[in-house]
Image: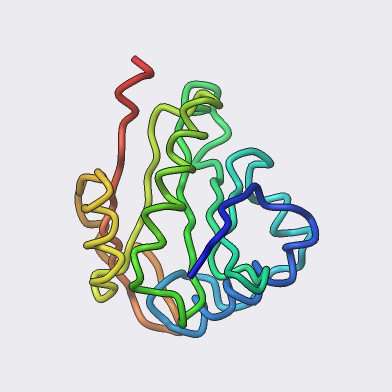
Length: 164
């Protein structure tokens, strides 16, 4: 199969949000319980470092984007990674292609640390982030509730070697 890796465009919003809904429905990908509007999604994520992967039918099958972890000036180079694939395309090694592109792009935009929180039961995501150079910082115990149940998050980070 041939895939195209490209910057996310406004025309991708519907497919991106559809894939995000699959992540919500899985129950192990996010604390979110509802798909945001396009406007709300765009306000939450940085305009740069947004990438999609398309299949041969020009359908978006995966996406990644960054969002701020803080409004503090001192932390402007730290961002949270969000990466999602439609169920059909998970586990095919495509996530690494998308993530590696975003990591390079994030460094070009001055981000020095990328972080991500993963639910302990999301073993695929844990292995994926470790395979791509993220290290476990620790576990945030009972950090939030999802559908009335307390959830832990394993916190990962990746420091850019090129931004000192």
